[in-house]
Amino acid sequence: MTALSAAVVGSAIGVVYARQESRQRFVELTRLTNERDDLNFEFGRLQIEQATWTENNRVEQIARARLGMVSPTAAETVVIKR
Image 1: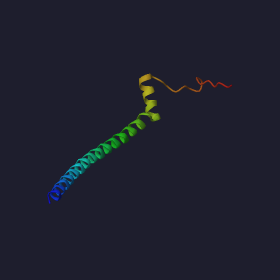
Image 2: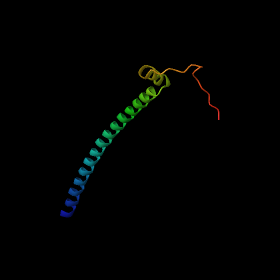
Image 3: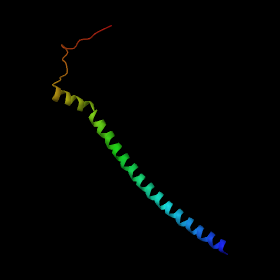
Image 4: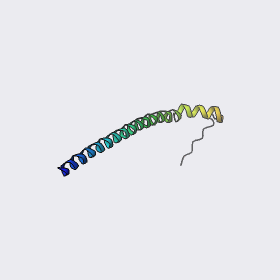
């Protein structure tokens, strides 16, 4: 009878431990899922920002405004043949 009682108590402790581990793992999974979603959102935002910065019009505007660059005229264009 004592062995049976010890087995029942041991089993109950094992169930409580397993449930606690399960809860902790679920909380960690939820945290990591939220972190993944936040990182995916940030990645998408950065891709849009990169596309904006590398757009040809944007590069041309910066070249004209900050560097004073202009497109060459037909008379200034030189064609080199090999």
